[in-house]
Image (cartoon, rainbow, N blue to C red):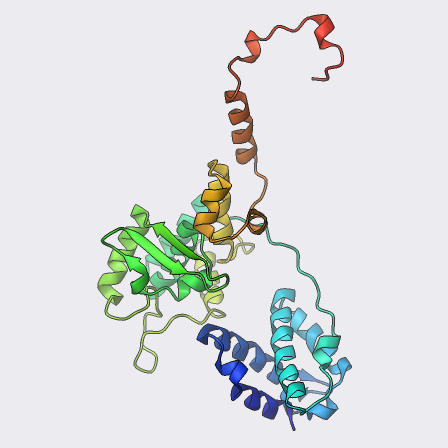
Length: 314
């Protein structure tokens, strides 16, 4: 059996067809990259027989994928392992060569956008009807501190204009959040509803695909966003996925309590919020000012004798 045939068998399996549509699309995207990867003299992985797959070939493929980004390569590796595990369970093969390749670690990302850069991006995106939905996805991710993937799939049934509220069950943790609609975002949602309210997605692709308005592919969306960033003169360091973190950091800087932040982000415990947080001068200054405000006297009201000063280092 060839790898391509195993993939076809996996797509017919219960475990695959029991997945969410979003997850199935993600797996297919990465599995197709694995199948088309050329290794061992230019031969596609998909054309190899399962009995001919080796750890060496898997390592060569992984190294090639890492040239496009470690996180990207790890996604392909994870999807490839799932396919081969299916083959083992169905007794088509006896070992998972992809599981023998150690994945490289990726450091936690800490990049945040300047607020001015967010609005530079939105100005460019909203100036063109063809990119308005991309801008709206970014706007919602930033204002509501939600994942871009969830905002990409947001439906009008999640929006309650009457009560000025958005409700969503997050795809990753199944957390339910109920969030107010800020004025600026609300205006864009009303305009978008006038143009696209007849179908279910809030920010679909602006042109029909096979007779329907469908969401952007989660792997093409960053490329479209990159073009907008370039037109806005923004740094190549920025990513759409940073906007959830950016909004969270702004709440930290504003002195919002951890509990209230979690009610927005949907995290179940404070430890989960920490990867989205970074130490900033603004948050440190706020902490200092709050600390000073807790005292009833100022520095000028404090008199310390020479004897009292002994042992103090100021």
